[in-house]
Length: 106
Image (tube, rainbow, N blue to C red; front, side):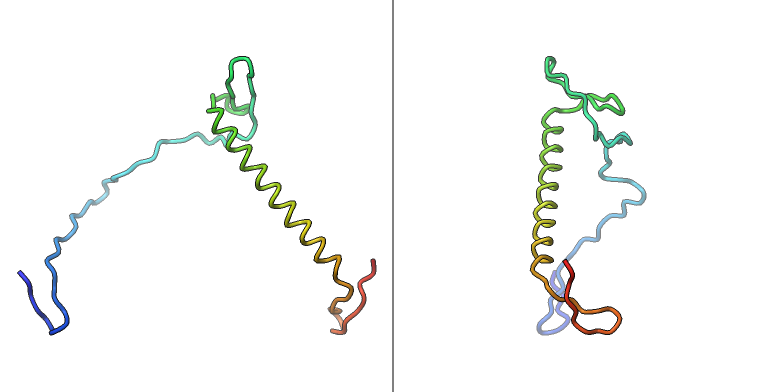
């Protein structure tokens, strides 16, 4: 059943969405409050345990966390080196008091 309102507009039959109320379709698994930042590695049993909450952790997850932390460190270090290089190339700056360009003392 098509209802024409205007020459260019056609209303399509759309069913209204049912009201869900307070029901949740998805729910999350409750997690612990521990961030698992310190690890105890048992290389003989090939297990990793959180040093704070003593929960057994997936070794691949721990490896991924360590890789992410190392990547963040290297990116931060590279940005720091770029900033040092940029600041090293500057020889003058604008004075906050008088607005004139002054030499940077090294």
